[in-house]
Length: 428
Ligand code: EPU
Image (cartoon, rainbow, N blue to C red; front, side, top):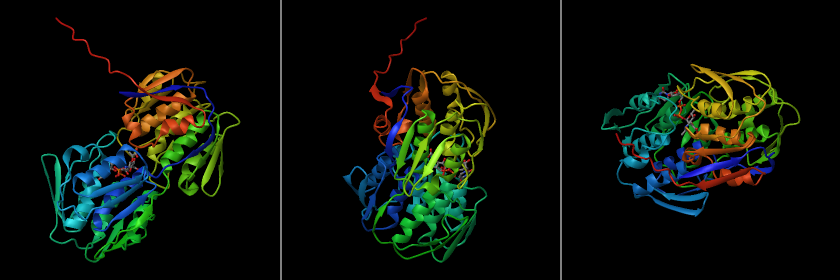
């Protein structure tokens, strides 16, 4: 198995280019099912989550051609059945998007209950509510969700909670439904806007994406197009924090600075210098990192997907910070790992109290989910000594070539193979 081995203490300096957005890419790859002409997707991040999405399509009969590692030609016309293969789909959250896209195309879908990062209970009741509003029935049989509709009819969907996946699935099911669907209390994340732009370029009629009311007027068919995915807001934010944690000076390129605003504001409150340019931001530090209090919120608030990384920076800030994250049940699992590195953090319910320490110390730790893993990489970069991170497959679900990008700006990080230790049977 592979681990990242990081020798901490190097100041990051130079330029990092951000890849395409994971959470836009997984939705857009799934969206190609809604059209039976070839599509070319550019700036697709080369990560395991997008690879799995493409593999699911291939197993279902689509033709998938990588013209380079970030460009995929997808033709879904030979997909004839609305059944998603069990083993691949159950490993990732975004497999739920096949419910909406297959329902939109075939009026029926069979999709294994979605997996993904273990952040606590992750129900899909709001997705189902949207399908039901549009006229579909649902049942769960042996861990597979089955939705079916004779006809999908435009309707008014009001989400009880702000849900990214639910909003995306509602758009998918509505895009070829009859008449107008109005989605209220819709999520506003940048990847929802990107998905709507993709579908509109194919001929869909979606208005209001990026606000909390999205109107989708159903169209007969969508045409194949070439489309480039937006840069990854969270990957960019992760490198911004890494630059700050190592007191470095890094130009982070290929970003949309507007998408980074809530991250920029919080870093500036902590004394980090963030300069914004058209498509890049420069992060540097020339004084102490100061404490701050942060609460995660849906976009345009501070993203839950950046909470573990920012909290890691706060472990070496001056003073006591309070971080509240109640979007998911369990987004503080990385805290136990950071404590092994000398962090002083207590967590009660969904609030972490972080007492800054002078520095973290390298230790063997384990990525418990994707962003937890990213946080441990940051911790390793700024810690004294060597940090070995286990279970890095979590990190590789969402960060393209992370060790290459960080090495290029001066980090001492290696991806190394370790023979799994044999467990000795103890008799008696
Ligand atoms: N929720 C429900 N019922 C639903 C749907 C959601 O109760 O039907 C709850 C969830 O349990 C959670 C909250 O609503 O407490 C928000 O969940 P949401 O649906 O917004 O999240 P998601 O679609 O499952 C996406 C991202 C996550 C990101 C969240 C929040 C993808 C593939 N995943 O998840 O990304 O944290 O939105 O922004 O887009 C990551 O990239 O590391 C990641 C976990």
